[in-house]
Image (cartoon, rainbow, N blue to C red; front, side, top):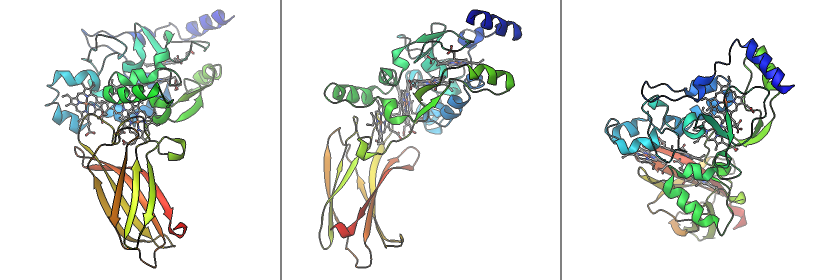
Length: 321
Ligand code: HEC
Ligand code: HEC
Ligand code: HEC
Ligand code: HEC
Ligand code: HEC
């Protein structure tokens, strides 16, 4: 019956002309683009477009630091062919797509993913592969490029069970693999099984209570000094990353009961905290009578882009002191 339906669908679509989706020809730079994948995988494409992966090649910092793309050894990670290929080859086509769909999914003429084929009609071959499954071994796939970070995670994993990279950096969603874009494809999609998976967004998770973010603890409040501790409870360095210069800083802000900030103080943290490491701080910061609440915001600063990203906000109610 299923075969029959598939056959009919193929006939309706006049020919099963989807071979190009799994075909890469280096010699004439032919390969499917992320946009083509996105015509069916609408959500995955929209998510991926917002990530650093999609900018890994075109970012001005990369262009500059790779000497206008002259540095060949950078390209395997910033414009990779299939990361499942042990040959570690860079792409010569669609390089502006950076770390793209086919880098992670296409290998040996099939799309490698977390599940077996479950749809009525599959326009490309599918291979179930635990390395492209966020509940299984997908950290290995991340580790092909995030080498040092992966090694840190892996060496801890043996003793303590941390989530996979995607388990912290992705967002859990429930959905079929594709989205219909017209009435015909809507019918096809309605036959697809729904799966719980991690999306392609790359978030910076910050839920210290669930062990997915760094911890900040207030130890003591003296008349003019605040003592607090920053603990790296992550399974990798804080700040994370091998490339580029990153630095942490915290901003302490006193607030009035109505939320107005009364006073602020910024402290740079020049060291890198290894997993499990703590660092204590004593900050001279007079407690004003009219201010009750303190919040400590933790940021990372990228020297290449001169941009600061908020990692997390930690509020403390002063009446507990
Ligand atoms: C014409 C629509 C269409 C296009 C274009 C398309 N796909 Fe798919 N894809 C599907 C359908 C339908 C499924 C579900 C098939 C099934 O379950 O048998 C699927 C499944 C997948 C899966 C999930 C496999 C799993 O194990 O869960 C991945 C990964 C995937 N596609 C990647 C890609 C990539 C990468 C591209 C671009 C090179 C692409 N697809 C282009 C329709 C498409
Ligand atoms: C082919 C190499 C490659 C693979 C595989 C890869 N990454 Fe990346 N990743 C990069 C590069 C390169 C960057 C930096 C891009 C930039 O900043 O220009 C990056 C950036 C990131 C960032 C930083 C995001 C931000 O907004 O700053 C996170 C988080 C991340 N990757 C997580 C993952 C996870 C999780 C996986 C596995 C599912 C993975 N990566 C697989 C190469 C890779
Ligand atoms: C850095 C590697 C990486 C890149 C780049 C990437 N994916 Fe994925 N993709 C994964 C991983 C890992 C999973 C498994 C998620 C899970 O098991 O929860 C996945 C799952 C999927 C799935 C099945 C689950 C779902 O969301 O329905 C589809 C379809 C898919 N990807 C399509 C794409 C498309 C299309 C692109 C490009 C726009 C893309 N992927 C880019 C790593 C990647
Ligand atoms: C327990 C949750 C957790 C797990 C598991 C985890 N991370 Fe992270 N990761 C974080 C948090 C929180 C941050 C933000 C702190 C920072 O910027 O260093 C972060 C930061 C990062 C960054 C820097 C983001 C940026 O903006 O440039 C990268 C890259 C990264 N992680 C990659 C990985 C990889 C690869 C793995 C798997 C080997 C992994 N992470 C596993 C929680 C996690
Ligand atoms: C083994 C894979 C790999 C290679 C080789 C590689 N990169 Fe990266 N690059 C990454 C990953 C992963 C990230 C993001 C997380 C991190 O910093 O570890 C990144 C991030 C970057 C960033 C963003 C840094 C920032 O300031 O946040 C730049 C710029 C960059 N790389 C340039 C280069 C240049 C130039 C080369 C070649 C000399 C190179 N990379 C080689 C994997 C790689």
